[in-house]
Each structure stands twice: as structure tokens, then as C-alpha cells.
Amino acid sequence: MAGTEANSSRPWADGPFELISITSLGYKCQPGEKVAPYHSMAAEMITVHNCLLRGINSVYLQCVNVERSPESLPAFIKYATAWGHILHEHHTTEEKWFFPEIEAITGEKGIMDVNVEQHHAFDEGLKQYNAHLENAGTGKETYDGAKLKSIIDSFMPVLRQHLQDEIFTLKAFEQYKDKTDWAKWTKETASKAIKATQTADGMVVDLPFMVHNHEVAFEQVGSWPPVPFIIFFILKFLYFGKHSDCWQFAPCDKSGKAKDLPFAL
Image 1 (spheres, rainbow, N blue to C red):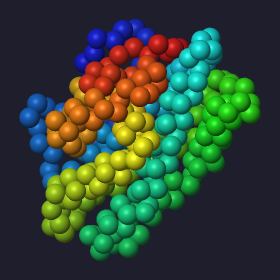
Image 2: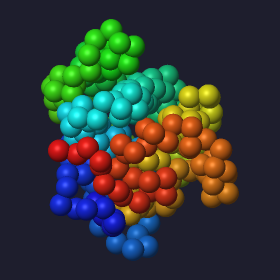
Image 3: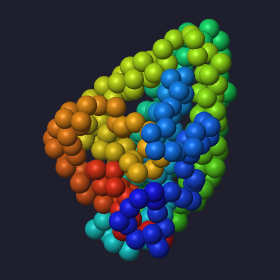
Image 4: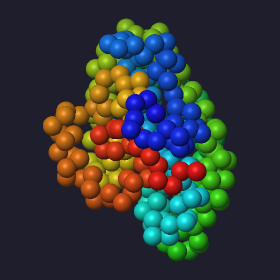
């Protein structure tokens, strides 16, 4: 936790799967430090990947102890399910149009192939994760926190490595810095990604999930999500309350301030 009112003596969502630091791009996290345009997408992706890492860390730390509160289980299952859905959509979007655009800009066919291959390396574990949550949610099987934790252990080391490796791939855009206006492209791409969430589930589940897993005080460069403040305020007012029972398990409030995880072990 970078700056928080949460009780730091309890486990928090910056582990066990380590967050990614902006220092991996060669920056020092100093006040006022600017990111070079050709590192814009890498910096944006670090923020997104850290939201995903906090999300799975918060699931991992609470999945066993939450069983002590049967009335909380349905909301926790929805919360954990949202993470699996968002990760799947994130990688589908990358393969469908994000990576092809990078190939077109750089003129390097297959430049992102290694990252696509990594997607398949944790696919089986992710399927098991989603299947257990779906079956538990529909009553086909009893929720088992220890089982879910074991499944996460089976795929997260590989996924964590992938999330880091992808940043190094994007960092290499510095050798293509004259190919396009990378800062403008990053802004347009992020806007396209936000628009893709403008579905029934996206507005009330996906976007709130990511916001509640974004700690503003952690190595913040620029503002996130990439929408005007007033629009973001309206979105929070209109949509963030529908599944408020789920966000109790998240590591941050809707303003991006770290908070305790109620069932962390």
C-alpha cells in the first residue's frame, strides 16, 4: 500500500503476486516525472495489469476465510467471477485488435506472438478457476476456498510472468519511436477500450471492478481511468452502486484509496 488508511498489519492486495513497478521502464517515480511518449502504452498497461494483480491477490487472500461467512459467499463468488471475465476480455481484446495494430504501426509481423503464446500457457488453469466459481454460483458444487486457492496457485506464477513480460515487449517501442505519435495512439486505444466496456455488465461490473482495484497513490503517472473527471463522476454515481456488495472484497474504495480486506488471511 503506497498511501493508505488501511491497517497495514494485515495482508493486502500488493501480494502474494507482486505488483509491477514503473521503474521497470527506467523511471524513478519522482514527483513530476514524465513518461516518454513511446512508453505511454507500457505505462498504461502497467496500471491495467496492476489492477488485475490486485484483483487476484484480493481473491487469493480472502477465498478461504470468506467461507466462515455464508451470507457473504454469493457476493464473493460474483467478485471473483468478475476477475476471470475481465482477464479473458482483456486478452481477447489484445489478440483481436490491439496486437494487430501494433504490428501495422511497427511493420513487424509477429512482434506480439510471444505474448499471445503466453496467453495459452495459463488458459487451462483459468478455465478451472471459472468453472469452479460458475458451478458454486449455480449450486452444482459446494464452494471450496482451499480448492480455489490451489487452482490460483496452479496458473498465477505463469500469468504474473506474462504480465511482466508484456511490459518489456511494450517498452521496446522506444526503437520504433518515430513510427507514430505513441502518446496519441495510447490515448485513442485506451478510449476504445473504455468504450468496449459500455455494455450492461461492463458499466456495472467490469469498470467498477477495475476502479476498486486501482490504488491511486501507487506510482501514479497521469490519471486513470482515461476519462474526463466529470464523466467519471457521473459513471460512479450511476453504475457503481448496483453490485456494492461485491466491492467490500476489493482493496480500494471507489476513489482509489486503499482499504482493508475484510476476510484476508
